[in-house]
Length: 129
Length: 218
Image (cartoon, rainbow over all chains, first blue to last red; front, side, top):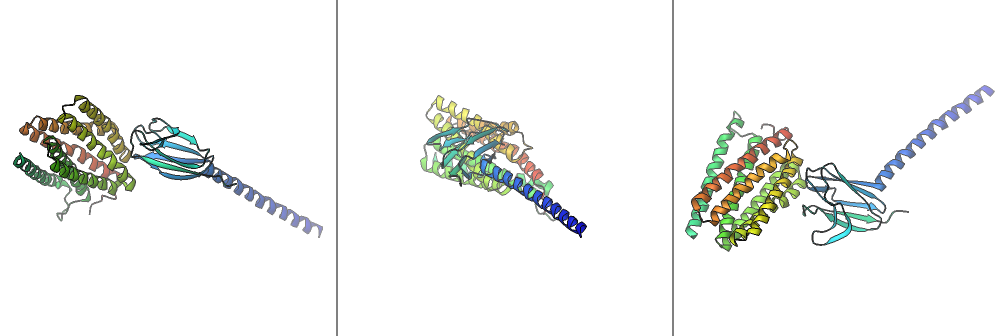
C-alpha cells in the first residue's frame, strides 16, 4: 500500500513539474511577444512608401524605420508645408535605420524631405495601465 | 501658326501609329502559333506605346507653351497627365497599388521640372533653366532607385542613365522649338520617342523575368 501511495505521489510530482514547465514557457513566449508588440514597431521604407504608413502605438514605443530603397530618404515630422519639429532623421540611405521613441500621446504626421509625396502617420495613445 | 500646329500634331500621331505597328512587327518573336501575342509582348507593347505617347504629348505641350497658346497647352498638359495616370496603372498592375500610388507623383515630378525648364527658356531665364536641369538630373537618380526597388535586376545607375538620356533628348526638343527650328524639333522628337524603347524593352523583360507566372504564354 505504501509503495502504491509513493508511486502515485511521484506521478503527481512529475505531472506538476511538466505542467508547470509548460506554463513557465508559455509565460516567456507571451511576455516576449507582448514586449515586442508594445515596445518596438518596425516600418519599412520600400518603393518610395512607408510600410505601413499608418501606425497606432502606446506611449513609450520605439519606432524603427529601415530604408530599403537605393536612395536617400528622410523621416521628418510634419508635412511639406508645415514642419512638426518633434523628430527629423535627415537623409539616410539603403540599409540604414532611424529610431525614435514616442514619449507623448498625439498624432505625428511625417514625410520624406526629398520625396514630398511620401507621407506617413504615427498615432500615439496612452499606455494601458 | 495654328495650321502648323495641327500639322505637327497630325504628323506626331502618324509617327506614333507607325512606331506602334513597327513595335508589333518587332514583337513577332513572341507570337504564338495561333497568331495571338504573348502576355510578355503585350506588356512590352503597352510600355513602348505609353512611353512614346509621353514624348509626343510632352513635345506638344512644350510647343504650345513656347508659342503662348494657352488653350492648346492646357489640352496637351491634360492629355500628358492622363498618360501619366495610365503609366502608373501599368506599374500598379505589376507591382501593386502602393507602387502605383508612389509612382504617379514621382513621374509627375519630372514633368513639372520640364515645365520649369520650358518657362525658363521662354523667359530667357538662364538661372531657372539651370535649376530645372539640375532638378532633372537629380530626378534621374530617384527614378533609377524606384525601378531598382521594384525590379532589383535593374541597377539604379543604369536606369538613371537611361532616364538622363530621356531628359536630354526632350530638352533638345524644347531648345529646337524655342529656336523655331522646326525641322530640328521634329527630328529631335523622333530621337526622343525612339529612345523610349531603350527604357521600355529592358523594363518589360525584367518584369517578365521577375514574374514568370504572371506573364506565362497564353
